[in-house]
Length: 186
View 1 (spheres, helix red, strand yellow):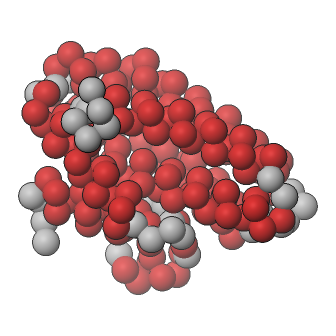
View 2: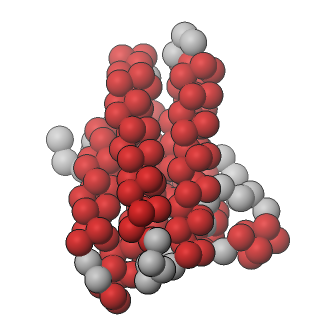
């Protein structure tokens, strides 16, 4: 099954692998190369988490018995990671403590990804509508293309987005693209 026709679960699992690889790339790089790799990591994390918040979590709540509890745990993890990501973005990749903080984020993000793959995604695969899961993939792909390369974590209002910085802008653009493909918004 190619990526164009994969369901959203398979697509997000592939993104988990890409995220892991990008963490390694950021850790190994120096100077401008580290900053460029970090920008790509921030972009992918912002699009990925927005897709989960806009598509996966609401659908899990709708179709999975006990979905509210599963989603509450994942949202708590995501909010912690978004705060760490925002802190790192403000700190900048040249800060002397950057790698130490990046390691904390890496551990949190990879633990979160394993929890999704174990507790959330299997339910979605079993209980979700295959056509809907495929449409969700198209929405995530559209978000990747539409989102700016400097992201911003989880703010809904444009004013807060301007105040909070780069990761929020990516999330807002990704959210708009997802809603457009799914037919749920402006």
